[in-house]
Image (cartoon, rainbow, N blue to C red; front, side):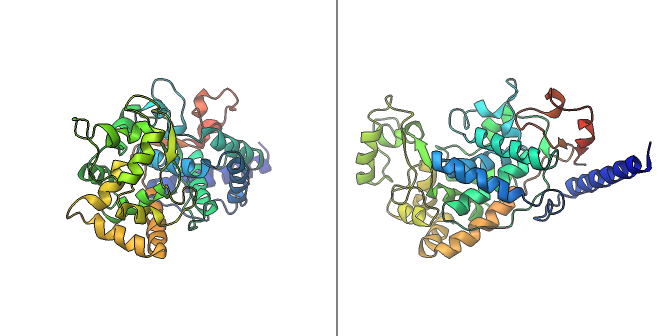
Amino acid sequence: MSVFRHMVTALFYVVLIQRSVSAAQGELTPTFYDQTCPNVTDIIRGILLNAAIIDPRITASLVRLHFHDCFVQGCDASILLDDPDTTEKTALPNNNSVRGFEVIDQMKTALENVCARTVSCADIVAIAAEESVVLAGGPSWEVPLGRLDSRSANRSLATTALPGFNETLDEIKHKFAAVGLDTSVDVVALSGAHTFGRAQCFTFEHRLYNFTGIGDQDPDLNETLAARLREICPSPTAGLSNLTNLDQTTPDAFDNVYFKNLQIEEGLLRTDQILFSTHGADTVEIVNDFSRSQTAFFEAFVESMIRMGNIRPPVDAVGEVRLDCRVVNANNSTASGTEDAHLVSST
């Protein structure tokens, strides 16, 4: 073996060891790709800008994708895997609702063309979420990077770990606590991502037609909004996939109007409205604070997104940099025989 090949091999394993140590210690840093892929954010941003022209919903969808990834096995891109036996895409909270996979594929392809075998799919999702918030008028932040992609998905965990649209505040808090997030500020701030995006009728029709099982309406739902929603969702069984705006006032802007809506009982999902309508809940005053100050909301949202982005996979998990975000490298027919060198344990 030539001296040059010895040097390249040694350098490769230095990088690999550094990444293994980073995974083991749970350390993420915004400068992770400064030397290996310095244009990573610019590349992701460019694809996002083009995608948003075609699909204005994509910004909110990519933020939700990051959320739904991190709550299951940590932020490891497990939600992107297509294995039919374990895919999280068909879990109840995700099925026919989580979207944006094709845009992530485009970002991954572009990055592989420039920085091959370098940027993890999990980091792509994290950066795409931040850039989506910025594009919609929200705050920016330095995204901590250095995540690895999981080699497995967990459909059953996705079914139980993700907050549902019809859960109580206590149930939501329990799920946040289970992944190490704060049960007051993080709950309210991250719920504020519903300041943009859409929801299907099936997620809220029970509030219109059969809230307690006797054909009644949710008493915490504004009457004017309820009448408008009945036009979109004409019955408990018709039009369940019809879409409406989560924020009926400024639907595509990332702002604090979401919290103002809660104060007048215009939270679309029950899990939105209970943040303000649950008597004695510690979330009520946080809603009031964010309603008064968009700056306060933005600052809290950034901190909560960074905390959520730091949710790590189990300590014995093995990670890699996937070449295709939909399949693990061992199942990727285009991968060379060297991809096993990208596998590291987080222990």
